Length: 444
Image (tube, rainbow, N blue to C red; front, side, top):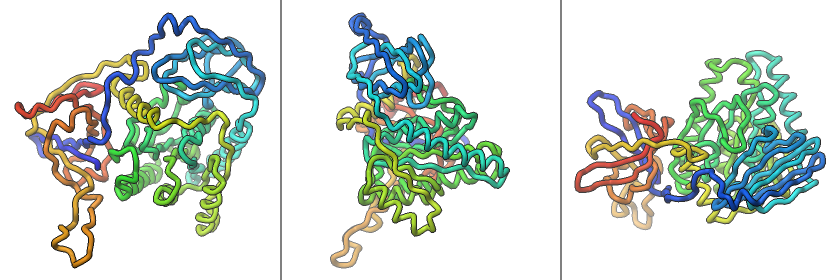
């Protein structure tokens, strides 16, 4: 269930918050990005031929530095600078070179160089999208750039391909819109969210997306299956806001021509497949890139043939460097992503601890509320949960280490359809004193 809170103030306005007890944090997921002397003592040098890829798997309990010594190379489409160390922990990544490079890796990591990659296929896809962007820009105000959705099962390389295609577009001078519908991991904010942001600079291989007023909605769960109605409601609301922005011309014709890239979840069977299809139609997708699954490609081709072939469904090869992440690794990744929000990627930020009384806050649950008790239903009928109803929730110690999303809503009835301003982390609930303590990335 998703939870919400409203902060009461002396004025008539209120600031909305959402609480997600299902997403809990644990301390000590990772430490600061300082490498130990033992880690620094292990150095491997890789001499890479043209169109080679160095693949690295780095655990969360170790740190690895990657440095370009000679030549040119990129990480998911972002060019890396020569003689500049990039530090990674808990990452699966690939360093690719078009023309040859010498790369130095400091620290322990599973690593190898591959000479067979899907990069030519990926860059050809970029070229086709680039031609469409240019044609749209030449068409003027009426043009709309390609809206590209990347789909595939879990651990097929969706977010990596999205990052690469966005980076290639940015390097061509565009500022595309990046939409993340994968609530399980959180591509550029905390898990449990769907989000959108305009990308004006290449996505940094360590620091990630440079955020400038992202549009974020909070589902409050790592899986849309816990409340698919709420998930679809949020996708629909995001689509409305993005369409209003385009119609207003807020970002200009060049922004519309730049197009949109949409990262998706890995749940592609049963209800997950239908959520995927509905999201594609809601966001008016016209290109779907399918990674590594023939069945999904065939199903989507058949599905969108009903729409008069307005959507082009393209199958791309999955990179051999994509590895299956164990459940424990994915859970740790979610915790680390949340800690990054508060402490920074390199653990270099200071959080502010604030307190508030229970009287200043009102907590609401989304979903899990029955429309009618079983006793009030006809014989044999089952009570049906109302997935979109807000239910008041009392403060308790169970909320410690939960994440609350601060909503822009000014009143209770607007919470479900309003984006969030940020997040706070509950560190203590003092039932005796009736007070809550929480971390926030900034004061206020």
